[in-house]
Length: 107
Image 1: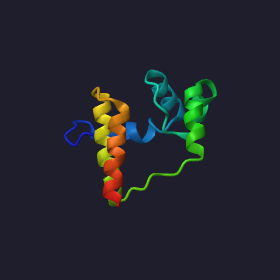
Image 2: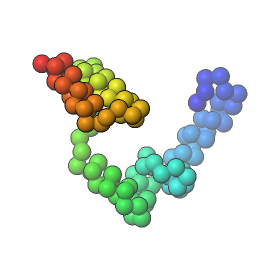
Image 3: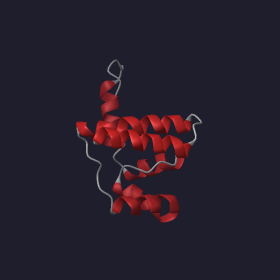
Image 4: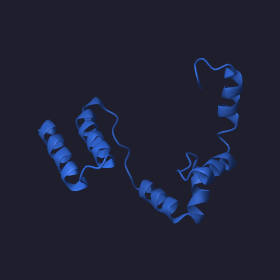
């Protein structure tokens, strides 16, 4: 919610009581094909969208990434590499350079 918004209580009501409904999450997914944040909605869209089904399956056996300061040695070079690739840099050499930078910082 915007700190300078005029209708904070209305925004709070909307976020607290509207966004938590699975039908709303499914509708948002249909408008912009992103995985819904609610388990029930994600399960629903996974039945008809093979991409969402694959994401759901991958997440089922995945591990949460650690949120510790030491991971900055990984996320910084990786984020820069990703931005470079999106900007047109060659993926293979860019990711290889990021991997080398990460390995160097870890050692």
